[in-house]
Image (cartoon, rainbow, N blue to C red; front, side):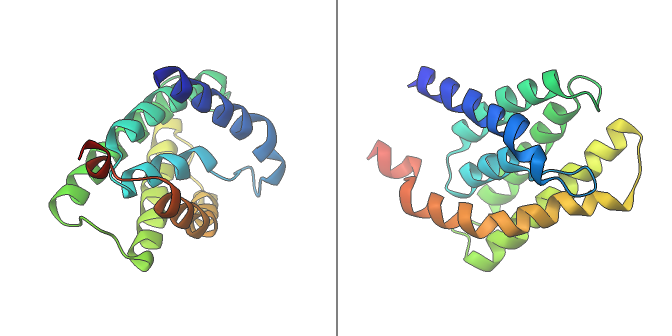
Length: 155
C-alpha cells in the first residue's frame, strides 16, 4: 500500500508542476496538491494527510525555484498540526459550508507563511486561497463519497 501512495504522490506532484502552471493567475497556479492534503484531513485520514503533505511538499520544494528548500514543507506541517488539533478537539464531522471556509482559511495561512518564508509580500497571495475555494466543492464531495473514514476501515 505504501508503494501505491508513493506512486500517487509522484503523479500528483507531476500534475502540480507540469500541467497546473498553465492556469496561473498573477503567477499563482491552482494549489491542487494542497487541496488533496486538506481533503484527507477532512475525512479523518490524518496519516495519509501527513504522508502526502510531507513527501509531496518536499518534492515540490525540491523543484521550486522560488523559495528556499523546505519552505513549503514547513508551512504544510505547521498547517497539518494546527488543523489536526482543531479538528480533533472541536469538529468531528464538518458540514459543507464549514469545509469551504476551512479550505479558504488554511489556504490563506499557507500562502501567508510562504510569503513570510520568501520575504516577498504582495496582495496577490489571495489568489491561491481563491483557487482553493473554487476547487473545494469538487474535492470535498469526491472525498466524502469515495474515501472512507479510518474508523470504518478498522472496525
